[in-house]
Amino acid sequence: MILKDQIKELPTKPGVYHFLDENGGVLYVGKAKNLKNRLRQYFLRELGRGPAIVQMVRLAVKIKWLETESEIEAVLLEAEQIQKLKPKYNVRQKDDKSFLVIRITKKSQKSKVKSQNDNSKFKNVILSETKNLSRSFASAQDDSSRFPCVELVRFRNADFSDKTAEYFGPYPSGELLKKSLRYLRKVFPFRDCSKTKFNTYRKRGRPCVYGDIRVCTGPCAGYVNEKEYARNIKFLKEFLRGKKVRVIRTLKKEMLDLSRKKHYEEAANVRNQFQALNHINDVAIGVRDDLFEASSIMFKRIECYDISNILDQYAVGSMIVFTDGKPDKAEYRKFKVKSSPLRQGYEGQVRLKVGEEKLPNNDLARFEQVLTRRFANDWPKPDLVIIDGGTTHLEVAKLVLKRYNLSIPSVSISKGPQRLKNDFHFSDSIIAKYFKGNDPLKNVAIMARDESHRFAISYYRTLHQKSIYH
Image 1: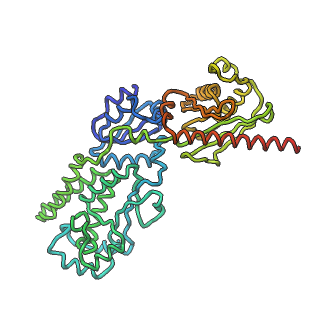
Image 2 (image 1 turned 45 degrees about the vertical axis):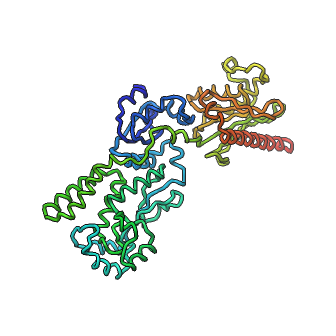
Image 3 (image 1 turned 135 degrees about the horizontal axis):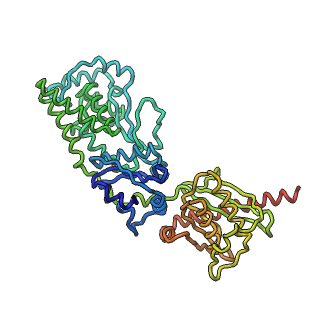
C-alpha cells in the first residue's frame, strides 16, 4: 500500500505519527491535532517544505500513528517518542539545547519517613476550617523539601545526573508545553516556587497568589499535608508518562470509596479532577496542522568536496563537514587521488552544458574516485552534498549517489574561469526552490565550498613539500 493510500485510513483525532523506512526504522516523529489533515499535507505541493522533509518522504514506505484524546497528550507523547526513538529527521528536536524540560524535585529521605507516619484522612485541598491549625504547623518548620517543586528549565541547564530531581522531556514545542502545564496545574495543583519564596510565605502564614487562585495547594501555609500533596504529584507524573487511563481509573475508585464513606466534600473534589481529565479532549492549546514546523528543519550534516592538483601531480581530494551550519573539523577527510580514467559507462552519462568549459576526463575521474571512496565507507550520511565545480561535476556526483541508492540533495558551485562568480547548480527543482531567496543557506554553502578548497590546497602543499625534501 502506498503512503497516500495509508492516509485514507488515518483518524481525524489528535495523535502522533511515525514515518517508517523499508527496514521499519523510524525516520520522523510528528504530532497533530487532526492526523489525517496533517499527513495529507506532506503530499501537497508548494507548502514550503524543506528538502530534508522531501527526502524523508521519499525514503518512507509506511506510516504508523498513535491516537490520543487531546492535543495536550499529543504534545507530551511526541516528546517521549523523539527521546526514545531518536529519528534521523527530527534533527532540530534532538539537538536544540534551548528546549524545555519539566523538573520535579524529590522529597528528601527524612521527609519520606515523616510521610509514612502521616495517617491523616484525605481532606479538601483547601479547607477553611483547618487553616488556623495548618498555619501553626507551617510556622514550626521548614517544609520546602517535603513538597516537590515542579518547574520548567532549559535542556542545556538540566542536570540529568541529579538524583534529587526527576526530568521529563525535552519538549520541542515550548509554548504548547506551557499551555499544557497550565491546564494540568488546575487539575493537580503544585508549587513551582523557590525555597526562598516558600519560606517567605511560610513565615507569613498564607500562600502566594497561586494558592489564592487554587493552582497551588498552599503547602507553604500548611493548607495541605504531605500525603495529599504527594498524591497530586504522583498523578501528574503518571499523566506525563502517558498513563492517563490509569489515573482516571484511580480517581474513579477514590471518588466511589469516599462517597460510600459519606465523605461527600472530598468526593466532590476528586469528582472535579475526574471530570477535568475526562474532558481534556475539549481543551485546545494551539497544535498546528500545517508543515510550518517541519519545513523549518535545516540540514544537520553538510559535506563539501574539492579536488586540488597542478599539472596532474599530487592530486588530492578534500571532504569537509559542516554540522549545524558550523565547521566540524573532526569529521574532515582527505584523499590521495590516483590517476585513472572515468569509470566505464560514465562518459556518455555525464552531460556537458552548452558553452561550458570542456573538462578532461581525468579531472572528472578524480572527482568520481573521491566520492566513490567516501560513500563506500560506513560514515554518517550527509543531508546535503556540495561540490566545488560546475554542472559536469554535479552529474558525476548524482551518478555516484545513484550507484549507492542514495537520495541526497546535491549542489555544485562554480566560480567561472576568473573565479569571481558563485553560480549555483542543483540536482533537482526541489532543492533549487529551497535555495531560491534563502541567502543564509547560500552563504553557508559558499563558506563550505571555500573551506573545502582551503583544506584541499593545504593537503596538496603538504604532499608537494614532502616530495621536494625527500
